[in-house]
Amino acid sequence: MKEIFDGIKTAVKDIAQALKYSDFGYTANQNATGDTQLKLDVLSDEIITKTLSKINLVKELVSEEKEKALKVSGDGEYIVAYDPLDGSSLVDVNFAVGSIFGIYKGSLNPANLVASVYSVYGPRTELVIAKDKVELFRLDKQGDFAFASELRLKEKGKLNATGGLQKGWDEKHKNLIKSLFDEGYRLRYSGAMVSDLHQILLKGGGLFSYPATSDAPKGKLRLSFEVLPFAFIYELAGGYAVDNEGKRLLEINLEKVHQTSPCYFGSKYEIDKVKACLA
Ligand code: AHM
Ligand code: MG
Image (tube, rainbow, N blue to C red; front, side):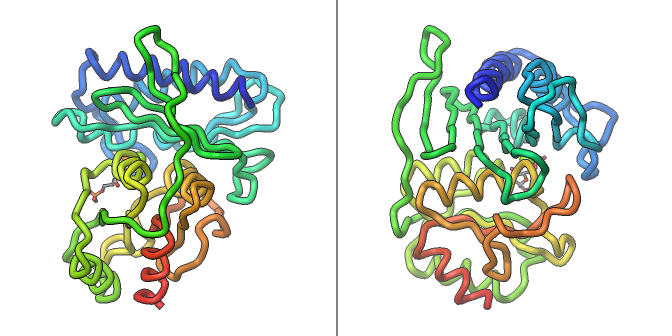
């Protein structure tokens, strides 16, 4: 698997460079979920495809920016599902964005997720690798990812990040969010899940949610390359990741590459509360 991690590191460094100087305008095309693609979405996808398709261990690539899974020439057992540039619509306001990778062995199924990686392109470029534990690395002056720390969630946090249009929330979600604020939780939501989940992980806990809404009853965030890789990371860091019925996201039935699900990620206290409020 080291070869796959090394390929991801190379791609992440190239994307970090592209973000600094490339055109961030829109293309005329839409991706599989109907989002208009930015030139940087396409470029980041190309960088990752080019790098990972050279790795013999990888047999298939699944991307937010590709309609279908792409078979590559490798004869290995791994499928890498990725969001090349999460939060890309925030590049024009210079917010932190990232890339998300789920590494599946055999077939695209949550039970086969064996590792997850994500990067954050902020003032610094950071990489989090989750395999047997969750580890944070920072890109140093020499262009290497230097180990910074192991990441663990506490039992309870202080941050509350929630997405989707509020006018489309149902009563249960509204009550959950209000009760967290009433307890003293702080609102922290940038609009890039990778940065919002990273903040909660590094600050030790809290809740990130993207609920079912009236216009998107199955949520917005996609399982293969957004929700499941982060569910894997949060559980490995001592946290929890559930859907709007309180069920473990890593046990969900994944039938389609671009399938979405409402999702709640957090530490123990917040997810117990999610289960009580949404039951
Ligand atoms: P993207 O992959 O096209 O950037 O879309 C996913 C993003 C997430 O990063 C974020 O949590 C969500 O969309 C924000 O959506 P909203 O503006 O509806 O809160
Ligand atoms: Mg995304």
